[in-house]
Length: 221
Image (cartoon, rainbow, N blue to C red):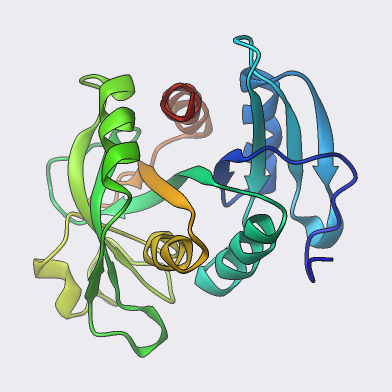
């Protein structure tokens, strides 16, 4: 039995992974027909059900930061996860992305946990499918994964800032863990804050999450 998750319903081999439990609920209501809560242990809400196309899908929250995401991914892999798409948020470092924009991760760099920016790629085939389902709704990006929230004013920016387009707290950890567990994974991130410090409001974040979630579910299918 996994150590963190306590599933109360069967989990699918395909999953959309989000950090925020509330976003997991919101996406489950959009992506699944009659979703059932499959986990509520430790506040890591997860939901499973069928998509309108009749495919089994799980929407699972991973919590905040790399350590929580790594533990949840390990449990999901033990429970039969085989493919996943992370739908997360990030802070833009490149000036071009605006709040609410979507970034398709082509590479994550591990700067958290004392890492020195080691590159971690997503699954190539799943990323290609995600790119196709997103169409022109996302720009390719390299992301730095940190132990702390990047601040747009640069007060906490490190040497990663000149090497990446955006920063988050768990993509590199998920990509590396997926490789260890034999899970195919891709990632699409929502710009929650621009490089200039402009923040997306709740409505814009919810709309972007729905677009990203729909593309993720289609790519997994």
